[in-house]
Length: 168
Image (cartoon, rainbow, N blue to C red; front, side):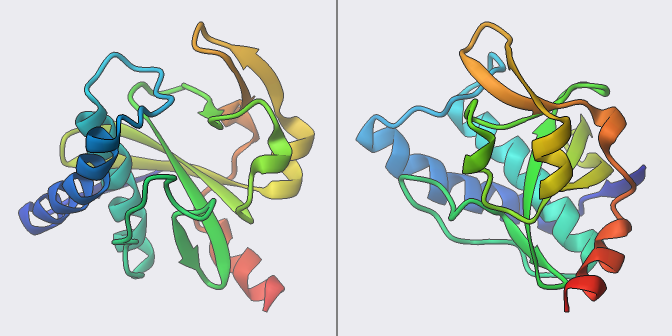
């Protein structure tokens, strides 16, 4: 597990991206499928901060785009691999898709990140799509069925470097 502490400049960037993503959705009445009891804006801030933490760790540019339907099914490209970042507020929580259909997972790799403080994120691990499909299961935490994968199936995030070299 790798700790990333975001700088004040990173946190400012996070807030700008979050506003750019959240404001048009709020205006259009689009709601996220969040599980936590936080505002839509805070949900965006936490998720984007996790994306920025991963981007900083791998020295890639964070995704600055915004749209009413979200991203294209992944958050970052690392070593040629499309990566979907999921941020959880408590250590041990599952990697959960917004759908119960695992075939809607469009990325090559899932990355599980835990938010420890507003500026501190633990990059817990990564899982390849094939393992996500094999190891995951449908669960309902009271907000509709989701495809979830337990953290025990994740390997360290540095495996992404190796996987990217294998794919090249």
